[in-house]
Image (cartoon, one colour):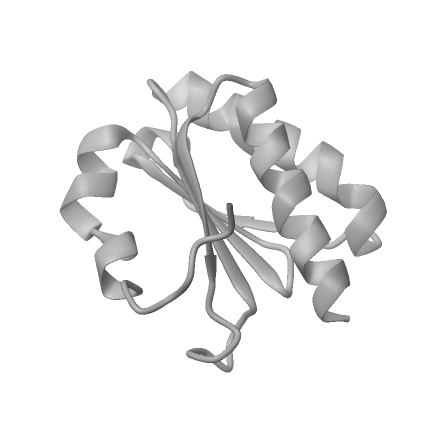
Length: 113
């Protein structure tokens, strides 16, 4: 199970990179959170870019998650969340990412290489 969710987190990171997402970070929160195992955090340059990133993540993750992939937030707000169960994806505009500082909130979490 843990290997599967780590694999999913890596697939998500690659999907983000495929669509030119910026600074993708994968945080391993298995020992810190009972909610999920991994957070994937990345930035997009504009609301349409966030929309494209979210679409790519959902397409690439679909086979791994049996169709899970609940999306919340609007690209125009600067923050989109995709709940894949064991992996939660946060896609931000750069200013919104800096404002909420999720990486700093989970600073004790190891980052996947």
